[in-house]
Length: 260
Image (cartoon, rainbow, N blue to C red; front, side):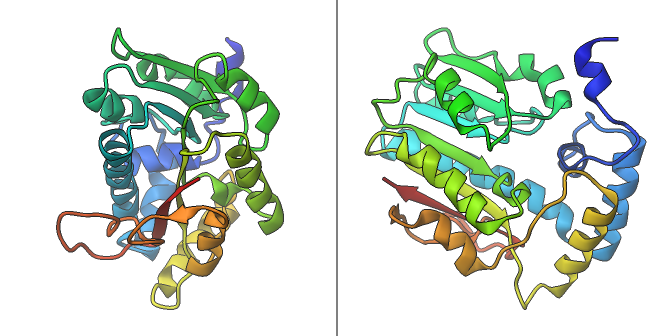
């Protein structure tokens, strides 16, 4: 058995695998599907959040590549490979785009090869590291990305796993401080919202049974990640509404994009 295989715990549901299940993927286990169904029973719309978050990723990356000229992406908390991964969206616009993926989930590492098949003109790389390992991430990313040039820092659904507010904000700030002017922060986060009380029950169930545990934050608390940055229109909103082509129902994942 390989080191990666020994690190994959199939006895407890895992957020990346449940996310994969909700988006129609096959990289999950019965324990993940059971938990995913239980959570969906508590909050029937929650499976839509994963899809909405993925569509937000596509719109944000496409905007940054087309309109802002971004050619470098640092995607932390990558999750399992799916349709329209960051490098696929970016390299459709700019074949020379470079992408570094970062995740500490051994199952993601086992499937990382799917994240490394990019265009001949561009480059993709993968790093097995935790969001909190800022120095490690930056040092490894610098082997693929030119950190003296603008980078899009992608943090989709990952800051939720840093429970302490001040630590969570500090980690994001340290990463952005290391990036050049013109860099962008793309962040999505599970929200606590009075109009969505059933989300709390779903999160409570997850934190009791699943791993890793997650933290909800209010829209104002999520906006704080963008302190010191120019927050692009329409601000911090439901990820389903961020520059969407049509009106869509709000989901309990809020998101924003900010420019350094």
